[in-house]
Amino acid sequence: MIIREIRPYSPHSKKVILRLDGAEDLVLYKREFTRLGVSEGDDLPDEVYDSLISEILVPRARRRALHLLERGDRTEADLYRKLRDGGYPAPVARDALEYVASYGYVDDERYASNYIRYHQDKRSRRRLISDLTSKGISADIIDRAMEQEFETSEADQIRQLLERRRFDPQTADQRERQKQIRFLLGRGYSYSDIRSVMGDLDCPTFL
Image 1 (tube, rainbow, N blue to C red):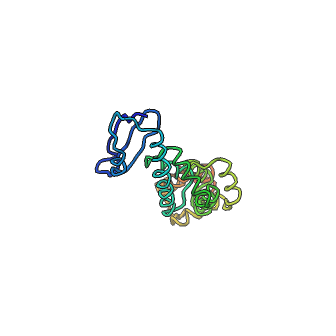
Image 2: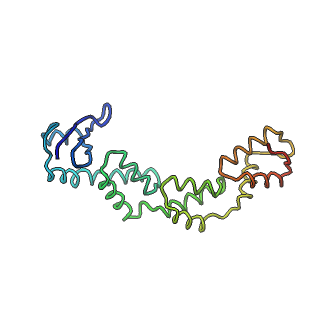
Image 3: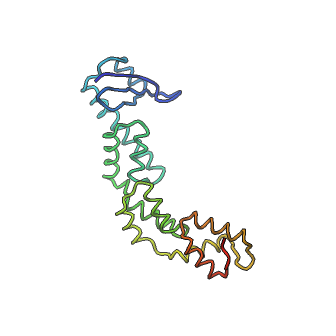
């Protein structure tokens, strides 16, 4: 395969990108590239490319995945995206994902359950589903996790949030009511649920 271009990975970086014809780009440290003894326009033999993948990038991607997980739990999609953003070819990123998953270090079902358990007292069901979907978790996993973990009624959540925000229905003016409604809508609660709860709190005027 022909090396089309060699350029710095980023300003002041110790890495370079090798843009190749017929294969995914490679990101290598400058010292690794120097040892190859190649230049733009040269042919990079398949066996050399395969060696770079198996001996350098696969172990490095696995270490990178473990390092990312040390900072906190991640979804499979998020971890894969981080590795791809770091310049690892797709097969290398998938290998690293399979590697950490084989040890139970990444588990979307566990992530979804923990996320719901931790956030359910301050975010609506709809907001939780939206959050988890945006993190790349499948609908089936989200549904199972919601069924197992989501316990608090949304009306109770709204009441608790209003209490935490020291909302007093007896003294709140129109501006304060509108402020609280916007806050609750931003958390994903429906206007009908907000109206119902705030009505229970003796707030007849909403907008």
